[in-house]
Length: 451
Image (cartoon, rainbow, N blue to C red; front, top):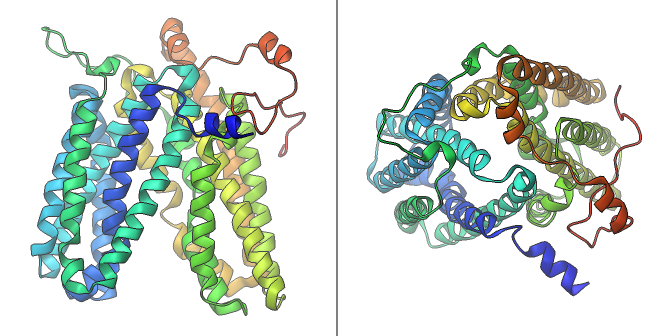
């Protein structure tokens, strides 16, 4: 058992380990600032909650506007260069945070941070898909997801410690984030070049293929995936508010539930991602995610009528189930992303995915909050129905997206980019899968969970 646990905790490859270290550095820096951001903005800068909300909304709009141009920059200059540049810019902006003292400065800096973050997210997504071998892509990204959550946890501890020492320490805490982001930029440059980073003496040509914005199936895939990711709205907003206002559960349970989610997202991503290697298995994971999301709605709805320890137990169960919905959706997304992008235009497709994802989820906080708090049982069932419809739409869009690529991308280009399915004979020789064996393949589903 100890050997199996050690193997499970070991990176799938040296490259996955280096990428995971980068994820850890990034998340530690980002988490340090985020954990103390509410105190920083209100007590240090002197902003009201309404002003903070306005700034975040304006920054989100800016991110939406620049998403596609950022993708084109990534394709033109190469993902690793743009990823590292983004980290340098964000580090410089973190250095500026302690010196702002007005609402206009806050808005300007928030916009700059969001634009740089959009460039970084687009470049990171394109680089990871480009550099990882297709057969290792999902497992490696699962390991990176674990490292990301470890980093955010470390950042939260650092940010929480800064709060404990008072506002003077909180004011200068962004400087630590700045140092970590500059270190992150250096770590990125030490990574190997992906294929689209290799430069020749010839001027870089415009990427071949049809622009992603003209691939309606891809826009639909990202929009429906955005709908599926509204599970995070339940996790971070709706369920905590429901717990505090509609049940007899103690307030401290909110923090404990977040801790449960964090631990699961550190330990379980590789387990959830096993056996996912193509569109068929990715959509199977989407169905599992949808099932768990619906169960969460039903369990949370039931807490309105429970009391005492039963309410607490129900919330724990609901949070565990919702986290499995998140884990399966993450694993499916890593595969769909790689399988449904034109390999020649990864940056472009990443940029358009920001548009579609935003369209799929921007409405959820207001809509879900209204449905749960105002419509009660019917509202929770409506939330479940919305995500079920999103999953059905994602199935249709994914198959349409694959047909689009097969019609417009050379077969040899697609073949090189596709993940390798596990060898059937090898799987049979290995015997039945074991949860303690991280290399074992999961059995195929015997039927659709949702038809």
